[in-house]
Image 1: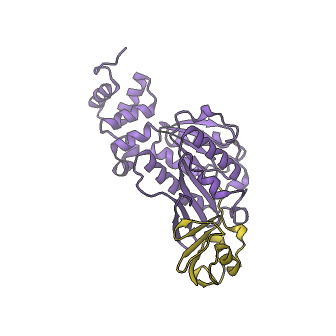
Image 2: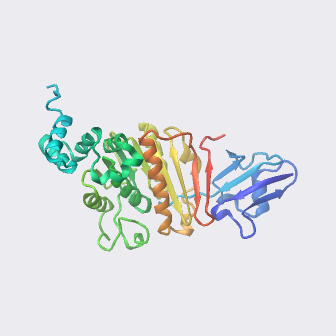
Image 3: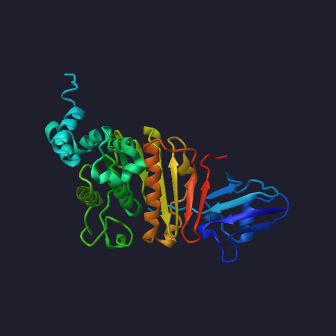
Length: 74
Length: 276
């Protein structure tokens, strides 16, 4: 199945910022991060179709998944 | 004694304005004769449709009533560093009547790249004192109530009358402490955070637990490695103040969420604040 993925700020990789990713059936956001070689420890917010989600939630065909890092400076 | 129409500040202001034809002079005299703080005298002028010159370029956007409302408002700025310096500057120039400013630190050389109140004359000076000096030279109608204190050591009395808190802190644990205070005292928080090219802004409703959910058990974020260049705090602080003014003036619409700004890729994303 295929999902749309968006990575923000420091989570972006040289060869991937946003695009479609094909995964095995019933993947989770955690599986996506592993595929994109983004450490889960760097992710503070996960959105699936614009709603907050957990790293172990099940994804579905056509979902859009966005990952954001923690920002805390002032 | 009940105030009569004849000796009301509004009536006196009208008389003073008729005599001098000068809003600033009438405000000054009203304050001197009644003992009203200058911010209150300015609010009286605004209530009668006479906006002082220093707010003339606010008027088209905020309106006479909006300017009056801001002059009567009390807000708190917690943290007077990168975000806090710019937030304070804009609130003061907006004519926000009473500002409670909180920071335990003194300026040091590493603040110079980005903190508006840090300059060659303020190194070693307490941030609260630098804020007081800035307010005195930019807008002396604003009342600054300074607390050289960490948010952890701040008493509930310091929050008295505060309608909105600007979270300009740089430690996660302090932010969570502030969020708990906002919930306990039922005060909304305008949260801002920065790191490198990136920043976020969110309105934190009392009891929402938004910051606790956002940070989890983390102590720091991407600023630890990216630092904070000068332009990002200015942008995020401006967004915090524009949203804060909307809160104070009742102009917030349906825009609820965490704004993520990326100044490198020029993107702006909004995540909803409601957790699943």
